Amino acid sequence: MELTDADLIARVLANDDQHAFGELVRRHQSSVRGLLRQLTRTDVSLADDLAQEAFIRAYKNIRSFRGEARFSTWLYRIAYNCFRENARKRKELVGVDEEQLQAEHDPQTVDPGLRHDLMHALNLLPLHERTAVVLCCQNGLSHDEAARVLDIPLGTVKTNVLRGREKLKRTLAAWGPN
Amino acid sequence: MIDDETLDRQLRDAAPYIDDDGFTARVIANLPVAQRESRWLRAMILLGLAILGSGIAYVLSGGFIRDGVIQLSNFPIWLLLVFAFGCGLVVGAFAVIFAIRKTPEVRDLTRLEF
Image 1: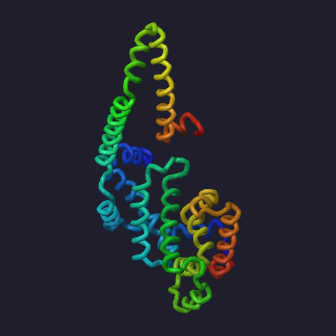
Image 2 (image 1 turned 180 degrees about the vertical axis):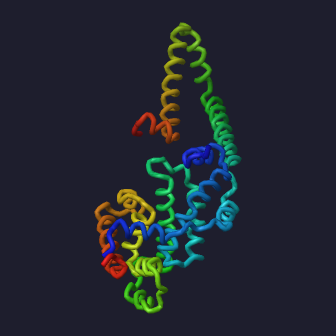
Image 3 (image 1 turned 60 degrees about the vertical axis):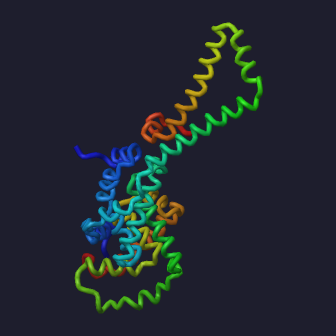
């Protein structure tokens, strides 16, 4: 029988069992790295460095995980904080020039196919909308969970998801049913 | 225009599973050394300091503590037993509260807010 996240966490807490923590990393690495790749606009190297830092931070602070939220939600929060701290250091947080970034993305160079257009459109969203859309629509978090991860009001999450969705739909209008 | 459901499905499909490719091994290699020994060391230091502090208090108190113990021996045995039992209950209650706070599964089970 496969152990649950709670079982593995209990083993880490009881015996500092690094093998159990390794299993937790194996289970959640894809979603955490995927989230960070979206946040860093597909900078794979930076995203993986941040994901590694996030998991190490999670291990050090696992005693503060109270089981009130899903373990993955707790991990996303740590990962998002790692990203924010890094972005602050690089002076990229929110203050990033979105118009300049959009200009860098030449629509003519985008490969054909909905997936490519979708990822391209996602990358064009402002950081706060992209983060909310990735957490809620791509990773299946509820608005409430996303609000906890991002440490912002629930209403703001809903607004960001709604706006992000509308922009994506407008960008991808050509793919819809005629 | 694409509807919400289709958009969400496309977003999920557009995020494929990322192969581990040695990532977990790198994380494990960079984890801090298990802190089990240091916790034991800390416990021993605390215990040693408590014993040392008690010894110093006994020496510095002159005959006060010894006289107190002698006076206690004059009390009826049932009173001493009640006193010891009461102390045990108080300490035990604090220990249970502390244990529940430190154990999320039990805390969730009892639905207690501390």
